[in-house]
Image 1: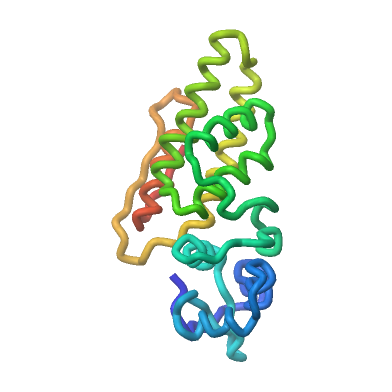
Image 2: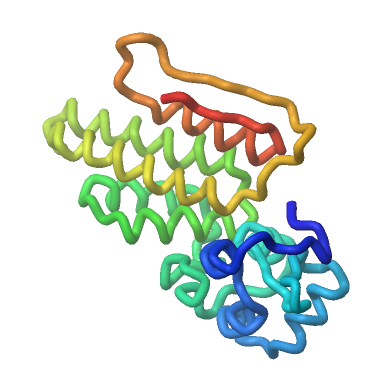
Length: 213
C-alpha cells in the first residue's frame, strides 16, 4: 500500500516502479488535472516525491479501474497489453480463446485475455478455476486425443506461469500484518502451476502468500 505523502527513497525506484499523472491521463484519455484531483482526494492512492510530485503504482491504478467506470484506452502507455481493457467479460468465451492461444504459443493473446478478465472485475479465483485450470484440462484432453503435442503442453505451462507472474504484479501488496502462507508442490512433481494459482488467490485476499515451486 502506498501511503499519501510517503517520501520515495530514490529516483531510480521512482522511474522504475511508479507512474506519473501524465502517463495515467494518457492511458485513460482524461485530463491530467483530473488524475491529480483523484490522487489528492485519495480516489487513486499516490506517493509523493520530495518535490511534491504525485506518483502512482500500477497495482493502485488497476484497482481504481476495477472499481470505477473508467477504462484503459491506451494500456500500452502503462506497460499493459495493447488491447486490454474491459473487452472480455464473458469467462466461458475467454476460456475457449485462452486454450487456443495457449496451444498456439501466442503469449501476447494469453496476456490480453487474462488482463482483460482481471480489469473486468473477475476475481483471481474465477480466472484460475474457470480459465487457467480449465485450459490445461482441455490441453490434456487434446493431447490424449492426438490433437496437441507434448511440447505444446510444456510450452503452455511456461507461458501460463509468465502470465500469472504478470497478474501477480497487478495485485496490491498485502499489509505488513497480513497472515503468511508458504506452499510448494510435492517432491518429484515438476509442475508448479497449482501452487502458483493458490499463491495468487491468497494474495488477492490480502494474504502474504509465496509459492516455492
